[in-house]
Amino acid sequence: MSRLHIKIKEVKHPMALLVGNTGSLVAEVRRNGRFNGQHILSVSQFDKDAIAYVFDVAEEYHHDGKKVAALKPLQGYVLANLFYEPSTRTSSSFMAAMQRLGGTVIPINEVKYSSVSKGESLPDTVRTLEAYADVVVLRHYETGAAALAAKYAHKPIINAGDGIGEHPTQALLDLFTILRERGTIDGLTITMLGDLKYGRTVHSLAKLASLFNVKLNYVSPDSLRMPAELISQIGVPQTELTDLHDVLAETDVLYVTRIQKERFTDEAHYDAVKNSYVITTETMAQAKPTMTLMHPFPRVGEIHIDVDSDPRAAYFRQIEYGMYVRMALLAMVVGKA
Ligand code: CP
Image 1 (cartoon, helix red, strand yellow):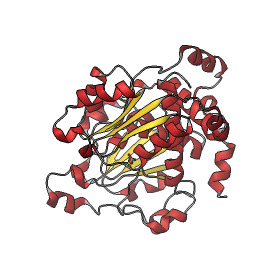
Image 2: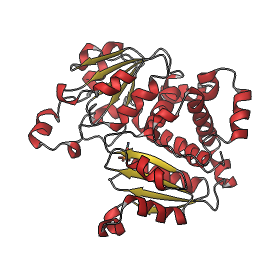
Image 3: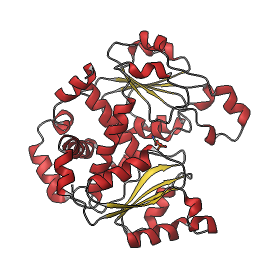
Image 4: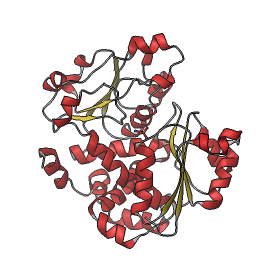
């Protein structure tokens, strides 16, 4: 068992870590059924209390996985997984989450084999699937697609990534990972690295993390900077850089992202920036001994495989935490958390 795993076991109840004395809050949100019947489209829907509630439920599922599986709280419920873009983690973790809660899944992981390839619109596809399912998880290549689907849907829509817009469930699992790995979010310096222009995970994470007392560093090629409009919405200290080494030594959490070839219209531009940053064992040697290294994955070379055995590399734990967070979100939107 790694040093970090030992630390994870010592983390207190997430709710208590985030909002202090929480007994009455837990009882209140349970009575009200927080997020029951609601869409999850953006991290803007989450304040600190809501985050703490999600984490509290996720933590229960993490620690009492077998008990929860036996209870089957979502037995009889159906999830429609509707993915217009490729996915491994988001798609599989939502499927695993639903199955672990006792529910079943309609998997549309490749829309070209659905009637979308005959020209069926997103609203019609969603209205069809909600006739069979209790919740629809949607990934789409267009920013705003989840919000459009939600306008037509009568069942909860969960945004699983909309173009270069947002990836709210990823941001929640990222923050959950930070909390479990570090035991706190306040006081941390979080450095985001790579494609910050097109990276929906960093767009959502920057907004969500800024609810806490953090410092954010954005390290990217000049042409892939964090959107200025997003920076203007964030009220914590932020610094933009091109050289990771300028902030590596002060970084508590290094969040690496892929340069996303599929977002570029100009291949020469992609070729010019694709190898801008590679985290190696040498990079790790210059980082804090306590630093947490994260990546939403897939990675295509930005973290060398030799780094995987470093206990600071949290990305495979991050992947597992994602399933518990998504179990919590599914249970919450159908009113069974
Ligand atoms: N992090 C993430 O969204 O991964 P997938 O594209 O594999 O779902």
